Image 1 (tube, helix red, strand yellow):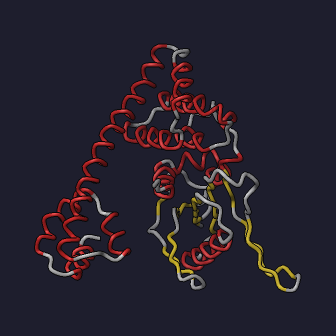
Image 2: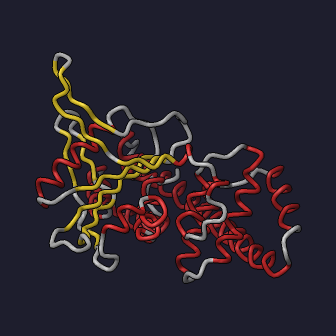
Length: 307
């Protein structure tokens, strides 16, 4: 399973300035460029559903030529949810209450569908009277054409093009253009790897698309072609290593499951799911430790200490 929120949070936090510069220049131009800083995460409880939500990015910045500061809240959403506008309003209200300063809310939508414009406001009405209207800025990637950004030399554009609107036939072309842009960016290797991994995840090509990609790759100049191939080769090596790790993990999981059944009997679905989520290192540790288990309580205690 792809943790979309984690990927986008890492991308947006790493290239926050570049994000504002391209997509919200009015905000970037209004703040002191060297004054912004990330604030601690905020956790909100939705009393109606009993769920807890954590705001993605909260940034405080000084406003140019003023003594005041601004809170910039950026929230990523990978799927369409009817309750999202209300949640944005709750975030806004509590952030404004806590910091007692203006809050500029931004929602980044990365889902593929729907493609219609997603709501950018939350309204409260009573008997036809508008009691309150809350507006927030939106960046809906599936409504942005990748062709409009292909010449924008910016790290976050290089990554987000992989989630923009494109025809299926354009996927190999978009991937090549993303990689060509990546080779031209003057950023360190760690940031290049972050963008490279993002592109590879969201533009994973099937065999037919890969053939088109390779054909198009041969049409660009040799020096640039070589740099792109270095990235592709790195993906292949990483994929092989990841496959080997997954194979070892599956073997360890199978062993632990057999041993647990002998030591403590059948597990509840909840406990079985907890074991299935363990990392390779934890599975190897559990395989040794469980030899001392006598009841299912021993397993529960171990899981609590390793969660």
